[in-house]
Image (cartoon, rainbow, N blue to C red):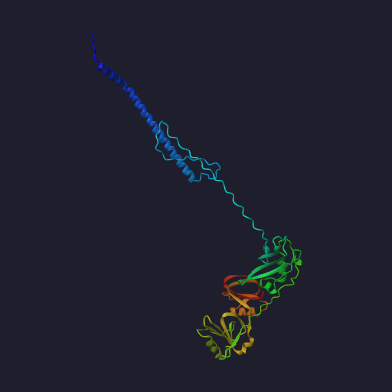
Length: 401
């Protein structure tokens, strides 16, 4: 007798038991896969962070000048590219592409600039200066040397001079000259009146010339310096001859631009009058022989005499015919707030107009100082320099240079 058993239920039970026994294994595989996925994600995040830090470092290096563009072999920088849509089939991060270094461009050789043809400098001077102490003051000696051209081994002629400021005017003083490198100096070249103006005599000028700095280094004693045959023979400048006019109404001799010094009558000046009124007032006063009229202040100065006239752009001098022959025109030039220095040989308390007359009438006087506060007059027979001084008025006789 064949008995069939229905085993489907048994098979299902066995299968269920097998599947239940496999659950721990599947759970272990799932956990392993989850750990692997987490490790892969962490590696990718770490790689991305490292790339970002590298990019920031490179940018700061370039900003701070740490990137040397002149390196012969530049370091290749990693190039960060945008991620492309692709599938990674393994657990390793995607490789970082390395850019190809750019070649350093070769420097283009510059074309040679054609040289200009040689240019020779001709007819030029070289100067040597030297400061020396002489007669209690500092003198700048300037020595010039003339060259025919720059190829000359030496100069062909030379000269030595100095400059001094006299009453605000620079005076050139020629001391010595050499006609050739083999010759001795000749001097002085300045006229005697010019030397006196700066406080020198012929002998002291020669002594000063022995200290000139010649380019050939030669020195000379006073006895080596011969008289200069071409020396200028200037004299005291003759005073300018003014143009005189005769006023037909009053008979006065009228000279514009000049002032008669001194001899003012009492209670002068008469203010706010015209030049014609000034002359009329003088004509009616027997004591008055001349007048000076100041055009700027419309002031009239009547005078008991007129002899010395000095330049004054703001003045008109008018004198009666009886004193016309006594008029003398002075070469004194005046300065306010200026003090001269030099060799003072005479002093006395005088009024300003009398100080002017004292110097003008003395041939030895080359200039004067008048100290306003003390009413002191000082005369000089040599002048070395001038300086600003608000308390002093000065005058100096002009010379032709």
